[in-house]
Length: 202
Image 1: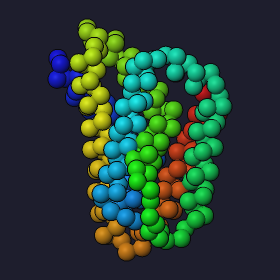
Image 2: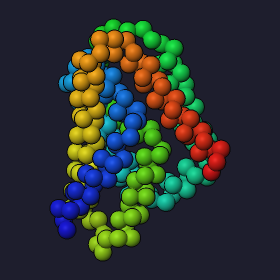
Image 3: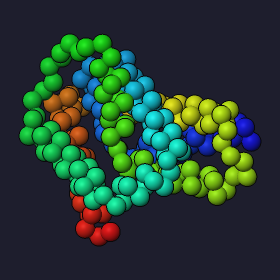
């Protein structure tokens, strides 16, 4: 039972992290335009951010879900942010020129991209609600630590898979670097469209 908590956290994270999101697209872009080592920094930061979201959901539970559901401006902010960033990337098609970055900036970028994601926070609220309804034991310090380890590893490994995908795509297509902004912008516009439908229909 103790070790199964680790795998539950790992599997739940992988399921939530596989759909394309800001962190996934960021590691692909960083791998293509810089290198795998730089994209791993984003992955580590995103892993810490995912742990932060999971712990927030564990600590506050339904309060978080009710806040996001009751405050329409949060959902609108997500829609507007995705749409604006997507539109900017579609317009800004220039090929990337490598620039120096401050120490830790990639870690911070990964963390912020992971944390500023209300749907993922709600996802973790649902995960913990499911666990509380199906498990006979509560998550004490040891079990919660194992769960957190699973969450971190699941996020990092999933993003590493996206990094390897970026490497593969870059080698298959010569102009992929110049088109990466178009790809990311298109995905973000698609996510914004889905968020807009949710606002209209629910």
